[in-house]
Image (tube, rainbow, N blue to C red; front, side):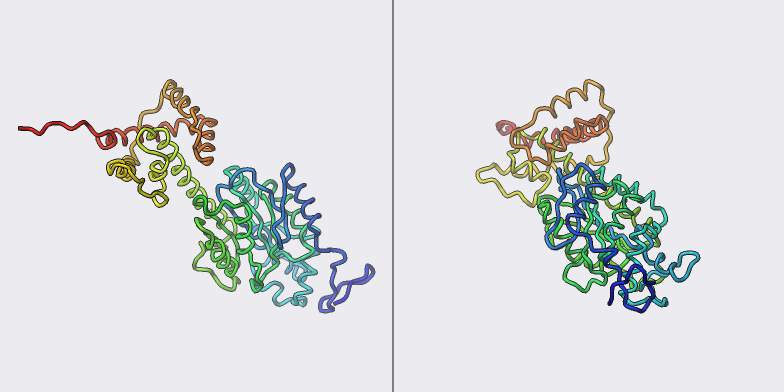
Amino acid sequence: MSELAATDLWLPGHDYELNHEYPTATAAELQSRWQQYLPGHELMQLPGIDGAIRRPTEPPTAYASIDLCEVVRQTSAAIYSVEKPGPLTSHVHPYAEGLTFANALDVTTVAQTLIGNQLVPPTAGIHHIASLLQNWRRHGIYVFANTSTSPGCELGTIDFLERYLPGAFDGILFPRNHDGSLPLTKGIAAQQLLTAFGEHGKRPISAVHIDDLAHHTIGFRAAVQELPNVTAATFQPVYPSTPGADSGSTQVASPLEAFCAADSFLMSQLAESNVRLHTALASNLRCSYVCNNQGVLAMVQPEVSAPVPGEQPAAQAFPERYRQALAALAHKGYEEPTTDDLTRLREQLLTRPDNEPAELSRTRQDILDDPAKLRSFYQVMQRHDEALSSLQPLAEPAADTPPQS
C-alpha cells in the first residue's frame, strides 16, 4: 500500500490509503472528544479496548450495547452511492460487493472519507431511536456503542452521534473485529465493561445488544451470559442481503423495530426489578417484628437463605407462607390513599434501619422523591398488610389452651 499525496487522485485498486489524513484516534483524543459529547462526567478506558466510557456514579439498572453501522447509520448504502449514485440500495453485505473498489483497503479508505466528512446518512427513524436511547439512560440503563468501525473513523463517528443521537450514549467501544474472527469480540468487550463496573452477580440484571450480523449477536450472548446473574437478549434487524439470521435473537425487518423490541424487553425487566425491590422494602417495613435479616432476605431471595440455627419451625416456615399469601393477592386493588395515609407512609419510610442494603435505601429514597411512586407503594403496603394479617396465627402463636373435655 502507499500513501496518497495531496496532489494525487485516488483511484480504486491502486492500494492507496489515507491514514495520514484520517489517522487512528489516540486514547487521549477519544477521551477529549467524548468529554465534548458527554460533558461533566468522569471518563475511563477499558484495558486493551479503544474507546471512552463514563464511569457510573450509581449501579446501572441494565446495559444496552449498540452496533452502529446498518443499525443507526447506513454505512454500506453510502459506500455504494460513491460509484452508483441514486436511491440508497438495500444491499448491505458484503460491503462494496460488485463495485470496482471491493477490496478491504479501498473500502476502508472510502469509509474513512465518508464518515470523516459526515456523508453517511442515518437509518430511518433516527429521531425515534434517539428518544428511546435517551429514555433508557433516564431509567438508569447504561448505553454504549459497541462497533467494528475501522481505524481512522473514530472522531467522525462521534461527530455523527453528536449530530443525530445527542445524549444517547454513556460510552463507545471499538473492538475492531468486523467478521468476529479475532479474540476481542463485541461480546468480550461488553463482558469486560460489566466486569469493570463490578455489578454482575450482586443482583439480577439484563444486558441487550442490537446488531445486524448474527456472529455478533451470538457472540454477545455467549460472552455476557458467562457472568453470574446476567440475562442477555439480542435483537437483529434482518436485511435482504444479510448473510445469516440468528434464531436466538429477536429478528425484525428494520433497525427502528429492533430498538422498539429492545425497549419493550428492557421496560418489562425494569418493572420486574421494581416489583422485587418494592416487595423487599415492604417486607423490611412490615416484618421486622417476626424475621431477622436472613429471614427478610428469604422472602424475596429464597435461594440465598439457609435455616437459622435455633429458630422455631414456625418462624422458618413464615417466609414461604408469606410469599404464597402475597401471590394470592397479586392482582387485588385497594382504595386510593388519603393525604393522611400518605403522610403516615412517608413517616415510616423516613425511619431508616442501620443495616438496610444500599439497593433498598436507594429504592426508599426514590419512592420518597416521587409522589406517584409513593401512591403506588401504598398499594404494595396494603397487600403486605393483608398477607401478614392472614398469617398472624403462625407469626404470633397463641398461648396453649386446655383441651376440650
